[in-house]
Length: 99
Image 1: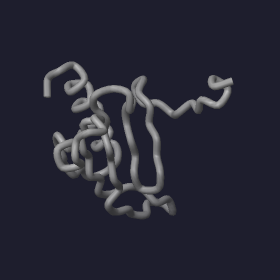
Image 2: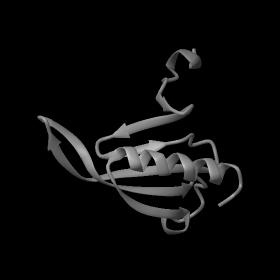
Image 3: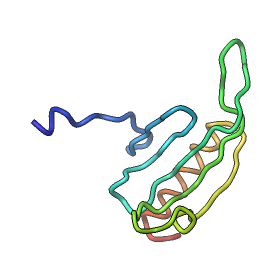
């Protein structure tokens, strides 16, 4: 019964990708680190709204850490593609123990 209620998330390079409004979480919350991306601004291109400025944050998932201490790295990128690129690199390195 519990398996029937388990939701399947979209993935990027084999890791879960979840969006809620202008926030995107990349990675598994059961692992030590996850990426949080926040869309800061958008622009319209050919009638479609796309992300312009995106903040990328590598965060520890330890529930006992304060939000300030959970933040490991942070950067701002121009566009979602560049943000996803650096997010995948940071998360891969962090999970490999190379933080």
